Length: 236
Ligand SMILES: Nc1ncnc2c1ncn2[C@@H]1O[C@H](COP(=O)(O)OP(=O)(O)O)[C@@H](O)[C@H]1O
Ligand SMILES: [Mg+2]
Image 1 (cartoon, rainbow, N blue to C red):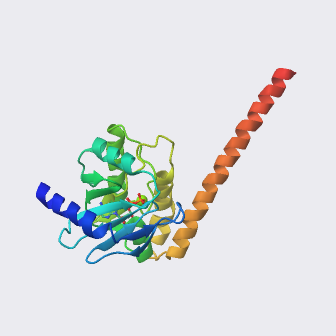
Image 2: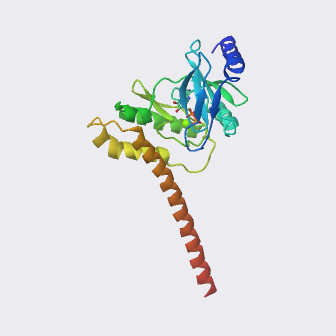
Image 3: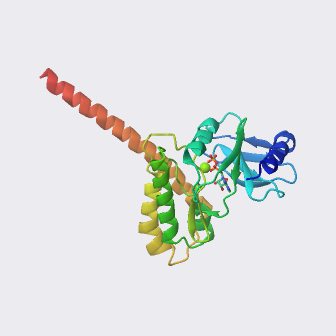
């Protein structure tokens, strides 16, 4: 990518976008709120920690800006360094003070595909699986791979958010999404061309989080119970 081109964009981010942009994160479990975007910038998408914008003069680049107070910027920069170049991931061309200039990935998130009733072929899931294996080979830990963080473009799968790939903790989101794809989506939703309303997708997302917390609590209780049983046996 042309350095001058990037530097011009960085200038525009620093002097035109950032001073006027209004974004905030109210709840770390919900997408951040964008209340003002200066002209001619456009919103590409909002995650729970950051929002992504593009400038019409630089259509193949985006800038990801972390909301004030939300962590993860340094980790994301490091992940891009370790990741190198791969067609299913973006590239980072510049990073400073809470923003990253990234290659724009065109496509529709699988979350939006579900809502719009756009068919998701199996190849998309296989591409994402391969991309995640590639990341593991580079010493990373694919994490937080849910419907808003993966996209489809011309029948191929892309991974749009790698910000949590340093997190070594087990994360089953992608495995669960795949289960839902093979057990629910392919036999039922896709043949009937069902469009899943955002309200329903959000309920699934929130109940999944609640179920995750419930599972963690049950596991903790079970561990405590086992420990106590062991101690009791030791006393006897
Ligand atoms: N490189 C990119 N190209 C195009 N769109 C992107 C890119 N990165 C992110 N997006 C869009 O912005 C949204 C939010 O970005 P994301 O990295 O997921 O933020 P967060 O880390 O807060 O979850 C994504 O769901 C996607 O729609
Ligand atoms: Mg995200």
